Image (cartoon, rainbow, N blue to C red; front, side, top):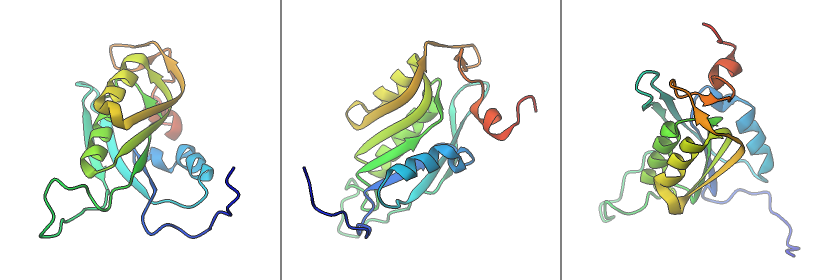
Length: 172
């Protein structure tokens, strides 16, 4: 058992960074709840992605990951010095897995060494797709899993559209 006292100062580099898949949803209870579990404040970065309703393909509309310009002597394939070891990717629902897989790929390319996806609900096929995006570098934590998707890519029986539920836009 470690009896050393915890220090309240922050490390000189971020140990954890949070990436919320949806800019609007990132301001919700999911982010607040995760932040309360950590002993120290951490930087929060946002990846805004949505699923195009007809093709069901991911579309990135926002990305505020810090840009890293390599030094002149640094090889172009070297890891990003501003990337963290672990990124928590908050995604309320993993349905088709496309937006989650795209976010994982973005974080991997940025230089993160491990991604932990935290989701409330997932569909079996979508979770498999996200998990195989980077098998050695991804963990997925789910509160629940449903078996299938309908023709619109919605989880069955599922929750419906999470954005509609969070922002009361059902039927608009």
